[in-house]
Image (cartoon, rainbow, N blue to C red):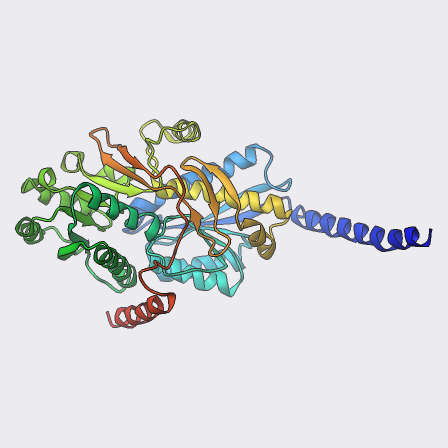
Length: 418
């Protein structure tokens, strides 16, 4: 009898305390009737052409959740900010959103130089960023959830597929090195070179193209002289159109396949599609993916934004970012960052690209790999599908993490001198 009352005396207060804690969290979360989140992309400047559309799918996810009753009984309120294609502006705006607007999560970021600026702010204030772009990797932060592909989920399988189907002689075309893109560009190129070397391939040529360049005939002539099996295109922005036009002028696009890592459906609607038909891209998502989840996703998007609109991989990543965050908050029953982060680990979501999850070690996402061929319809026909998700490895195994860090330090010093 004594033991029975002893257990009652111990466990009943514990149950009551746990109930009070849960009630307190919920009451705090419902105190003001809304949950603020920040959306931070370039809405102006040269990066706006690609980033402004990412806002649309972020808002679409938020509206869907609000229409279902919101989150923790509250409405999600998006606060949109313009990074203005400037990494310093991204830093200031992320700090403002966190400290002044009191957002509980950030969705956005552009190129890696802007992400690194936001990273400093979310780590400083212990906030949470969901980053939707593919990137070079070589980074991991407890305050960032990376929903875009790492190199081993895009570049590596893409190049291996090319070796198996076209050959092992590659020509690399990248962006002109600047202070803004130096680390990203050097890291991407190094990963490509490491992979080619590891698979007994050959890099027969390498060229850089200025983003403002209108004359790249000399680069195209060099490609013609080297006659590679495959052209690896890591160019970003409108210079892609100039590059493919010059290639078409020499009929190289019909002779030598190009595989791109930054060309998506959005670019296909802007560029002259006749110059690109028949070439390839590697992503984790294409709008043409024929699954029940994706067909529904595309239909809802077009109903909201118009039948002529298209969806890119970063746009889909932005959409699933919101749902990852929502699901973690629901599990935690609070928007408090440390609690949300605990429930993000190994969280699984049935996304338009397939069933994906957050890796518990590095907060990157397990993603599928798709290779698409450019069709006249301005869509990608999927020619290869991994049919399973790939574990994210932000530090490619060609080198140790310490060796990658040494290279990062060298590139950082070199970029500071630009």
